[in-house]
Length: 110
Length: 113
Image (cartoon, rainbow over all chains, first blue to last red; front, side, top):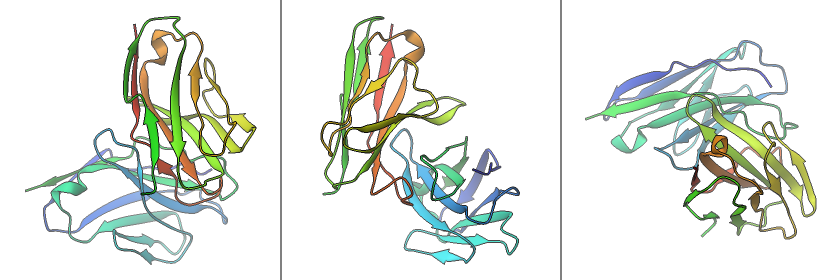
């Protein structure tokens, strides 16, 4: 599975959009981009995933560049409850596991 | 409510005393796995199971055992715990290994002295 690079930490003002970047320049054609988050020391929680098209659900939007070498997770109106570590993961459907790197620690500030 | 449960949530034990951490899911998932999380190392997979009686090693299996006798349960066994197994452990389940969404349990914080 391709490796990902994320900034270690970011801040965002409450009510504003949080844009979390992820680089995955070695991604291959059958690999998806997944986003999970972990609030404090709880179990990670699935947010969204995509292959090449932009995706949106009730939690977030995922924007994938045309060359698929990077992506951005967008939380449109961040709240204090969105403070968490966000993990960007690239994997193929044949993989046996999810490889969680260090992620980005997002702090939503009042 | 669909969930993955783990017990105990917190455990302090001594070196060499066998212990079992239980994991149970109520979603009829075929795939289950165990992860450990350590500061600076992220989550690392210990073992996984594709179905009943089918288990395999993940990235860090040394010192651990698992079993999958029933679809809903996937216990993690530490036969002779050592201090380097002090960690936060998560059980996860999904419909299959390729599923996009893994459901994680609440975690078990283990301290081995």
